[in-house]
Image (cartoon, rainbow over all chains, first blue to last red; front, side, top):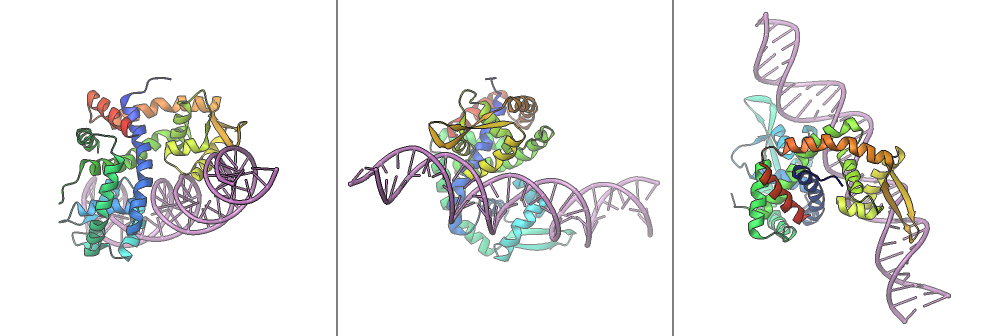
Length: 140
Length: 140
DNA sequence: GCATAATAATTGAGTACGCAAGTATATAGT
DNA sequence: ACTATATACTTGCGTACTCAATTATTATGC
């Protein structure tokens, strides 16, 4: 077997880990009526409470296509978790922000999500988790 | 903003990173006619050259459902990159292994993939990459 | 100022999955 | 041995995405 570079194993392990974590987390989120992608949207919007985000910024942050964002936001808007408003400075953009109901649902889902994260990363000590979070943060 | 635990940011960053890396990597792989998921299958099979794997082991490793594996392997088998054989000890299993053509295609795709990994992880120093690889390996 | 090009979003069509149900084989209980 | 249960897949159907094309608006070159 040819020895693999660290960057190679990082990318592969990251992909495998994401697939496995996604399965477990969507189980935790389904009682709240949202998928993992939708949770990440709410998380992103909750992290920018002051300003509303253009859909394309959301797409870049999530690593999705613009059309994917359009299709994902439609049901969220329909059930009133997010709100959309025209940007008066640029009529092409429709700015998205969390509604009050969206903040509530996110607040309800977050603790269970955080618990699941804790469980899933139990094999790592607290200091290892801290370092891993730092390193991942640099790449993202 | 409520402060997030390290495990929380790890899981979120991991999901976001996987989505972004996936987009860039599939661009590198498309000249070879395979998707990222398919590359990961070849990678997994190439890592176990002696023994053929039951499909369900592949599904667990990749974090996919059994049906997803069935559907993904069908075209790979059709173009001859993987081969399937009955397990004489258990007639339920169909064991999968790389064909010669599969090894060749994987060998052709791997260098470009590794280069892309190097580029994508450029923000991290070599020692940081080594530590990140170690930590991810423990979680996976 | 006006044609051209770039940007934000949506829509149509196709693909890649997951879940639930079905089939075939193996294992366990008695 | 024989039923009952569990396992390894496969298939039908629905969903979530992507890509390419379209529309609406804004920026740029002359």
